[in-house]
Length: 278
Length: 250
Image 1 (cartoon, rainbow over the protein chains, first blue to last red):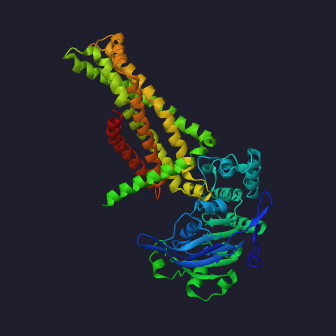
Image 2 (image 1 turned 180 degrees about the horizontal axis):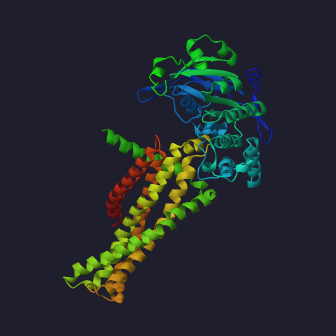
Image 3 (image 1 turned 180 degrees about the vertical axis):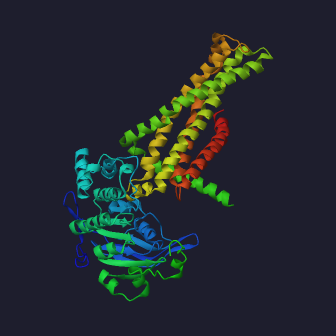
């Protein structure tokens, strides 16, 4: 399912539970830099994400992708530059009051002391979104969308990695998000589960037009589901375009990143040879 | 200089956490279940160890008092010494030390683990302030449970002293004269004084432990370091505050 052809032109997010439409939100990152001590992790990054778009940030491990996502989620403050979600500073509590923003963490970040059901029910309960019966319907609906309704009474420690990811997405969905952020949604998953998660992300976007930002180093995921892709290397955004533009790119770093070649004749592989294993 | 900065930073972040938690005080009735759970953890699960500790503090006090007061024929006053020592100082102090070691360490370990495994970040993105659901119920619970623990510690400690006074031959005074001296010299004000101390110590222990837990950064190894830091900081603060609160209440 290529989202390349279905350009992001929706500006309304549809609530998966009530069907009510709300404005999808945009994200603007302008001149963002982040330093931890003397270490520059992000360097002067700028891009816009349109309402209802799936924007993928790709890059090798350690390139600063997750730190960038944490800035958009309001969990980190920039050293310089700005991040705006629907024109507002995401680090402020008032912004989170106005814009429903959900982050699917790499390891799930499910609350270990709560059951799967209570993990999902926590947000509507705390924000007084209906009575317990309405909350129950909403939670079970979200679990059903992600096909994990049978795990409602289990605890996170009893779930596999793929199940945790799906529960984590379901928890995000219960928040009726206008902006959904995914941190490495397919990492540590087998290819089948990875494909299932990719389908879920694309479905959420197509069905509910949620603005989505996905951070990944999974090339297949990035080129399959995204409207646009940004490539981050060593804290710098080196490329920004549609998956088609990216495939056609002749920039050596992008070509190398998208089509990694293993040279088994390289001296470092020769060193691994032993008399028993020539 | 670096250490002074760290101390000031820690104090500042503790005050900020207290203000943030305080600003959600109105939400406490809606957090009844969390509050009761914390009361159970802070109060009920601490009772057995408080009982053992207080009983033996009372016995040692009576034993030492018997030995030292025998020289000037004042053994009848053992009850007053045990009564006042338990109520004004040892009850609140030792219960708070226990609280730091048993409950405080558990609080820091739990919150530090939630922080390291991004559960606290998840709460933040869900617009559920960690100070509201992780800190406020614990602070409220310790305020409610500390007086209960202190009353219990005092009674058990006094009883421990009476057992030694009555049955250890080197002390050998009757229970009647032990409790008569205790009642005569230990006033209600002394018990309240100890309770006030315990409230301050308990509140500070929980606040320190929550703050250190929520400010843990790094990996699982940092959780252990945070627990050690929280317990040591709590113990130092109990001792320092003990002087100032005692002076203030005199």
